Length: 208
Length: 226
Image (cartoon, rainbow over all chains, first blue to last red; front, side, top):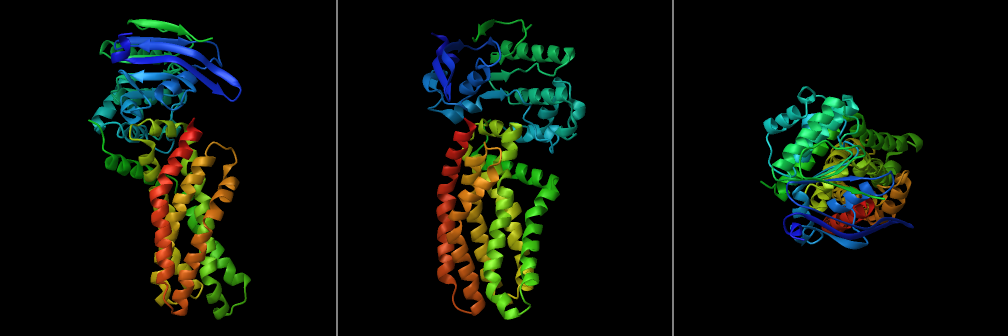
């Protein structure tokens, strides 16, 4: 388990939601320059797993550690190094795309408006920067959420169905972003239904 | 480079104010409610100024409590509904900083705004000008305390569909000491006796909730986030 020292390791995590035993002893490990594609039918706890990994949900049993330390011992430090994109884009409709990014990314690191604009440019929504998020289409919102992940310059990406609502071009952009993130030494845990076409050290895990 | 806690606090306060001013209707609702409720009393009661003046502190305080409650429901709920609360919780600053900043911003747009319009209402209810300083101070302390109590309630009820009735049931009993000492201080100031004792009590309640409520609200919110 040399990966545990420099990456993410999840050991025998159990989660119950009421009477339902959602995660039954899930273990995984993810090092730098690696991508883990988690798939599985609906209701098998993929989102729950992501929420456990990012520290929003405490597992009843088992442990999540990052770079050799349990995430519950240094939660804030750990969360500062990750970027999480939930299945909803998590944008404020009344704020512009740029403001949404500024208020979300600005809490993680000092960031300039130019950096944020270039993140929006890379995901192809530079033209929407000054529009309120509520007028954007679902696909555009997804791209803005992706720009937020990008601008956080986090080492661990946790993405929940990042390809939802994206057109073909958007999926290509998403794949190439994942590829360059992993090639640059990052780790990514991606929950997705369909096949990923990312050229990197990719492993697959099926939840059942 | 990581962002310090104070910087994060400032950023979240700016975010909240920005969001409030984009929705002026929601910003004005508690204020208009406060003005209307306090105007109803002189219309409903007889027009004897002495009677009105006797009732003024109570009317003022009950209206202030209720109008503050109106907006408490949305303190964390709108962020929880669109998923931005999770993003805030994961920003690496610790949830307490976020809770403190959001609650403070909430007080600025509701409590502080209410304090600013209270002289108008006070005049309408026949409160003499000499009592205004005490009235403003007690309302300021009281609304700040109420925002903190409300943050605990809002944290507990954020996951519920119709949480605002439960929220009132949680917060209003806790707000009773505020009403007693707040209205008491204003009442004493009107009658020309010293209101210092009641004001000290309000200040103590305010310090007590300001120091402990952020942690209670953080725990409440963390439970509902899970």
